[in-house]
Structure formats: C-alpha cells, structure tokens
Length: 110
Image (tube, rainbow, N blue to C red; front, side):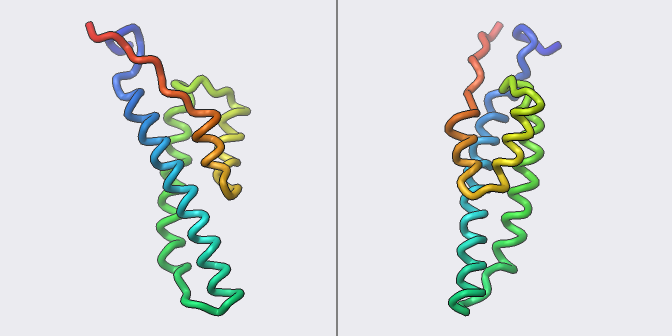
C-alpha cells in the first residue's frame, strides 16, 4: 500500500500523460487520414510511410496508458473497452479526453 492512504504517487502524472498521448494520438490519426486522402485521391506526396509509424507508436502508448489509468479513473471494464474503441474513431480520443478523463483528487502529503 502506498503512503498517503493507498493513492499511487504517480496518479496525477499518469492521468496527465494519458491526456497528452490521447490528444497526440487523435491528431496523428487525423493527419494520417489526410495523408491517405492526399496520396490516393489527389495523387499528392506520399506521407503515409512517415505518419503511419508515428501514429502506430502513439496508438500503442494510448492503449498502454488506458490500462494504467483505468483503475484511478474508476472505469468499469465496459468503459475501458469504450475508451479503447474510441481511439479507432476519428475524434474519439478528443471525446474521451473531454468527457471521461477526470483529474484524480490531490492527496495530502504526510
């Protein structure tokens, strides 16, 4: 059990990291969709090989951080699955960030 009543000492930074990664993952997803459109529809430059791996890494970080902040956010299994599914929908991570993620209550230092 962690000092301070069982609250993990990394709770606030993990939520902050999750918010940041969720935002970056959503932006990279939209950038990848735009790059795909540019490549295939208007036959522009191919930026998919650059943006694809960046988005992939951010997506994996999103999944990992989702599982790490799940408990401190108080998400049920169903809510966790919804958060994970949201990352596959354009603008989904923005919605998760604004509606489902709450900063944990600060713990008092002893």
